[in-house]
Amino acid sequence: MFILHASEPDNLAHYLKKNDWTSKDATLLSLTKAGEGNMNCVLRVTTNTDSFIIKQSRGYVEKYPEIKAPENRVLTEAEFYTKISTAPNLGDRMPKILGLDPTNNIMLLEDLGHANDFNLIYKLDQSISNDDITVLVHYLNELHQRFSKLEANDELANLEMRKLNYEHIFHYPFLEDNGFDLDTIQEGLQALATLYKNDAILKEKVEWLGTHYMANGHYLLHGDYYPGSWLQTADGIKIIDPEFCYYGLREFDLGVFIAHLHLSNQNPSIIDKIATEYNNYHELNPAILNGFIGVEIMRRLIGLAQLPLQSDLKDKQKLLAFAYQLITN
Ligand SMILES: Nc1ncnc2c1ncn2[C@@H]1O[C@H](COP(=O)(O)OP(=O)(O)OP(=O)(O)O)[C@@H](O)[C@H]1O
Ligand SMILES: [Mg+2]
Image (cartoon, rainbow, N blue to C red; front, side, top):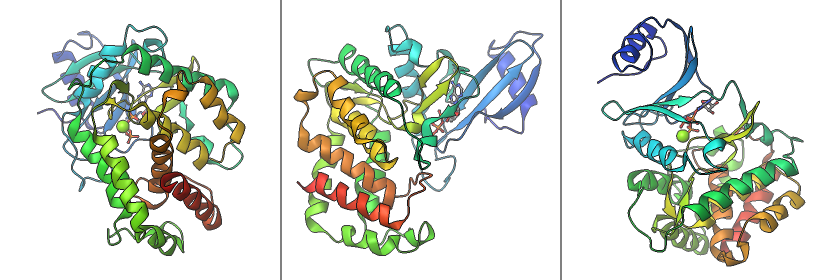
């Protein structure tokens, strides 16, 4: 088994040559962390001729090794990249896949350059532009329409990743004694969260939404469509990291997308723009869409996958109350 390690460039140089991924006389100049990420080991390889990204998935979450994760998840991510690679308006919005080693769960990707992701929008007063929203909605239009199926089936089922996500979105945040002291994030957040953790009506709705998340659907989803998956590159917005992809309900991608616009306090008109620009918005199930928006807002405030939010306790209280209405109405 080859284990990718930022501090072992010589081993990597040997591994790359063995796989014919670099030429015999290529020299590895640097090996650095590609950017911020929690789940996997993602490095930028620079040689004397080019640079590329190398991503390895392991049997655990990179940042929290005590949390198990499906070891070969990068293979599903690679399947997604391969599937959409030739589709107009999708392939060129994502990095090209350059190589895959299924034995070691390693994927090589085109380097999109040093680029910020959109996590900057959580900073107060950072707004997302109308043009950015248009690009982000059009990506979902293409993905959901072009790859839709008449019948739900098992392609890209990604069941183990879905179970992991289910746990962190629909279950863990709502457990009263989950061992995560929210006061370490912000004083008073634990008491605020307890109100919701004890709400039977809310918990029933969240469970219902969870079954919809787990159900197979007709639409290919990115599965993690939030600002951390959007890169601001010299060549425009690029979308990365479809490791949670599967065939499911369109409402899930849209729900996550919209939730993060609320979490980052964007102008309501920007959020309305999604409704006008998303094709067939009127076909969506409002209870499911609103529910997914609400659950994503809640789990980002009271679950483990915290965001670099600047909001104070009062802002969070308002957001939680808003999310509660979305889920229970
Ligand atoms: N093809 C690429 N070109 C340039 N930079 C990239 C590329 N792929 C990843 N990165 C950088 O590396 C970071 C981590 O990558 P990625 O999101 O794929 O990892 P991850 O471990 O799956 O992250 P997460 O924990 O958010 O799921 C990205 O935020 C980005 O900054
Ligand atoms: Mg990821």
